[in-house]
Image (tube, rainbow, N blue to C red; front, side, top):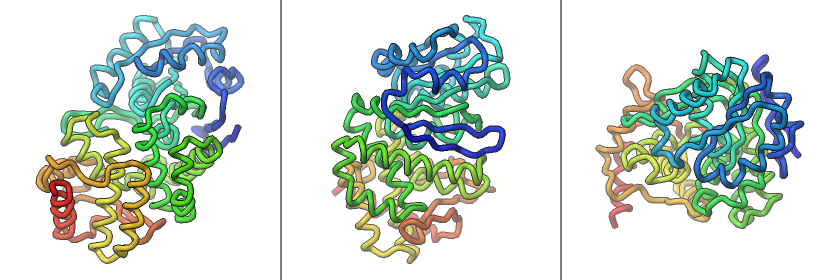
Length: 363
């Protein structure tokens, strides 16, 4: 087992990465301070892993709720079903919520924990590659609104993150690739050596080689932990973690939540951001091709949806958390491994990037 620490002073917590962790009480009991535990999972994950988790919670008053599976259910209505369970079971403010599932489950469960009785404890147990390397770490919680993704939520750090890589054995190939998008992101924004390693080892990751996966997960979590420790509430450097996300969120909103997986949309969004960076004169065409080649090898889409034009992109991108005082800010690349957050880009170049992408998608 590998253990990382996210250093946030009194809100610091460990990230455990390894195999056969789900049923280990030594990893769970130190992070549960009361007797009441609500496991929040979904209809896909609960049948697979709920029973494996239960031995770790022996001696606690444990209840469980299964949410419908999918990004389309990351809503206030679904959130309210968790509050219904907590109130129905008469859980007090010393209760602990456990998020057993992917990013949607983790985000909703975390937001419920942030809100219930003005804040209770929770533990992240991510079961998808994307949630293991991204959404489970850092304390961002929330739900979607029909006009914008993740626009309603709170910062609420978990007590711990327990990543059992055995759960990846049941992950669909498409979900695995979606997780690889977020892994590739870390190489692009701040870790060029890791990006090169990914180019050399992408086939091992697709083949689910356990050593390669463990290395990639740990390296990704370490990168994210360092960024979050420096900027917990996204006042500066943490915004770099949104590389590709403004474009990607536009795809998710425009196509309908769940039509494209989050990682698929972010992968395409990263390529659009790289294209715009090249039009700004910051990347070479060879570097953009290098990025496109890795995304393609990771079995991620490298074309935008054929049904979305530039105007639709711009409309959805204008409803984004990084818009500041009416001005759009994007995460762009000065080099592979060197990202910046900037509003200082030529809007003509942005439109050219989107127009060119639509032309490729419709040919």
